[in-house]
Image (cartoon, rainbow, N blue to C red):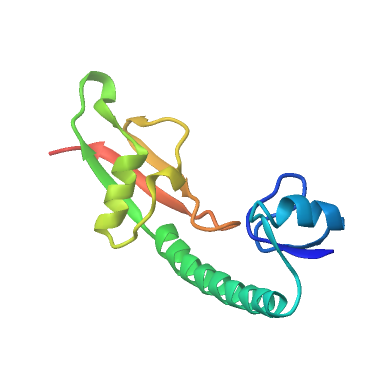
Length: 148
C-alpha cells in the first residue's frame, strides 16, 4: 500500500515522503496513529502540490541566504574591549556579541549558527564562520582591539 507520511517515522522516512509499505502496517499502525495517510486520490494530488510549493520555498530561502552570505563575507566587525596587562581582555567576545554586532549592521543571524569553538579572549583579527544555509558558510572578520 502506498502512503504519504505526515510525521517522521524511524527507519521508514521523513514527513512528506511517499512510501510503499505492507497493508497491515499501514492500516493497523501508520494510519490509526496519524503517521501517514493513504496515497490515493486527493491526498496524492495534494502531496504533489506540496512538493512543488516546498521546492519553491526552498529556492527562495536559498536565494535570500546567498545574499546574506555575501553581506556577511564582506563584513568586518570591530569590537572595542577593555584590556588588562599583557593584552588580556576583561571578559571575552562570544557568539552573542558577534550576533548583536551583525544585527546592528542589519544582518540577523541566530547566535547558535555562529561557529566559534571558544570565546575570543585576546586582541587580534579572527575569521569566524557563520552557517547561513546548508552548504553556505561565509566567514565574518572580527577585529578585537583595545577600547579608547
